[in-house]
Amino acid sequence: MQLATYRPLGRLLALLLALLLMPLAAAADQLDEVRERGLLRCGVNGEIPGLSYRDDDGDWSGIDVDLCRAVAAAALGSADKVKLIPLTTAERFDALRDGKIDLLARNTTWNQARDLTQGVSFAAILYYDGQGFMVPRSTNTLSTLELGGSQICAIADTTSIDSAKRYFQRHQMPMELKQYPDLKGATKAYLEGECTTLTGDRSQLYALRARLEQPESQRILPEVISRDPLSPAVVKGETRMLDLVRWTLYTLVNAEEMGISSDNVATAKARAQTDAVRTLLDLDGESAEVLGIEPEWGYRVILAVGNYAELFERNLGKASGLNIKRGLNALWTQGGLLYAPPPR
Image (tube, rainbow, N blue to C red; front, top):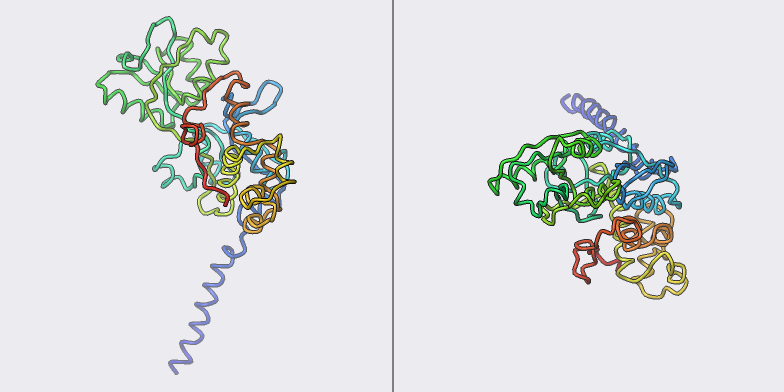
């Protein structure tokens, strides 16, 4: 009697458990959705030359934009199969978690709090940045240690707020921090004299200064007060998407180190004999099979956007007009921090 009673109950519990697990088992992961859609939705800033910027003609440029294009080339076969979606600082993580975008490539600092609490996974460091300060050259201020008593314009909901507070407290300097919703608002307030100083990532400050009518009227102070590694991010748990973005970025770095560029990648493909080159370009389709994409994705990435040096030069270096030095973003073999796991 007991056995007869428990068997129906056991079958009922098993059925309920199966019903609960069915949506999870049937759900496609994000990379599948991107490939089925045939379009990668990439969240960017849109207002920072060098990182991501849309000009008056609607044309996009920037190292974040090029990363989005590289991922599209890998996943979908074409760098043009990407939709760039401008996002504010405040809405960027919500947009990713809510499925409005597939990839966040919006000059976002990778730190512990965000990694553990925002429901996102950071892929790899695209750009080593750091917080700095800009002042009118007419003030003759040459160091951040001279900024005591300053009124400082900053962007709300960024790491710049806490970093500035800690820096001034550590050096026992008073200051007044004024927060604005975006870079445009903070810049407008600074230029109109509401603040004596503007703070933000140095990449942003260089980009902003280059766009002014009189860029020589502004000085970016030499000190860097924080570590701000900028990284693309995906929704936490989307492991295939994370792997794809991470290894797309690593492909750009490894291509530079191996001397493979958009100019010679076709020759490198035709003559490839070493395991390292064949793996980098995925000529044998081994990594493509794991990722669930078409073979030779590494070749497509480099052909579409070039290697990391090419991205940096056209978006941030001399060719861009910003003339930002490679610095920490040079290869590890050239005194920088740029380093990727080898392809083989």
